[in-house]
Length: 355
Image 1 (tube, rainbow, N blue to C red):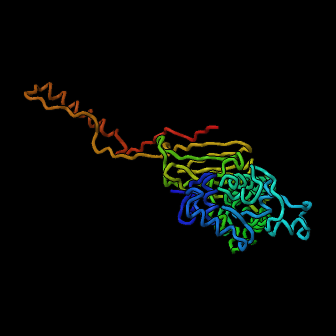
Image 2 (image 1 turned 180 degrees about the vertical axis):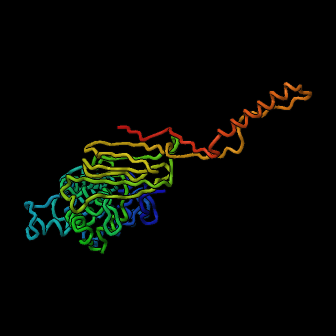
Image 3 (image 1 turned 90 degrees about the horizontal axis):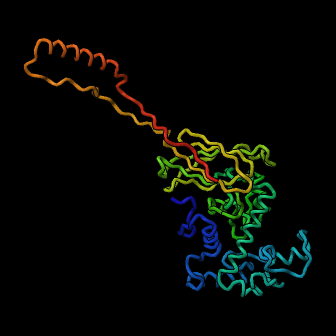
């Protein structure tokens, strides 16, 4: 069972590379599982690099502003955030009138589009930048919260920022999903979140909590894991409050990676067992939950285990009197064998922590 959704009928691994492959597939219907010179990738690059495509280029359909942000492209105007400025007008029209910086050996648009290497370098930079914007503006306080039935996760928020920019993601979060901005293809913030949730973005930020559920040291699949989180000191606590989600473990006994704001108090409950975890600011935390001690085995004792006396032929009167005393003792012992049903509690495990 995968936590991520298929994109164009392909389910990619839920790691950082899988996210890039899924994003590329969604943007251009390419398949980075295939080489760059495969027919599907050649065809998709030809289609999506045409002038009529609003000037967005490559596997990830980036524009001038994205590659300016990543350090690959520049324009001959002074930086400005004013939408009426020459800078903003030039950086958003994607006519590619400007100059390439030579970063990563890219000196032209043709260099950038020659295979995936430079494009993957750029998208890695952009993902890390978006992660920084989300973190620095405290939008990561919303991680785990559901809006319109869709959970805000690290990968989903990064995908939405790639689609329509971090500002649009922030508006979505602060409006509790009511401001759901769409791109030129009518794809919304929520659409991208829903499609690209639950990937592990790994080094996007270094704080990650990985949880595995085991029974007698073996992974348990298909078990419900409740995760509650709360960050009372948060800038947006009045909008976020306490978050509660329930996940189902996969065949490896795992749930999706947990990422919350540093300092968030996280309570994990499985089979009635609860463990409290504090999200560290710059640390990977690995937990194994062994549910063995919450399992009870019940068995019925149909017969006494007390040995019965064996018949002895040709008993003497004294032997018979001794036998009567023995039987009386056995009956007395049997009366003390209560209850008939015993509940055996197996106490072998608990939560374990490894840094």
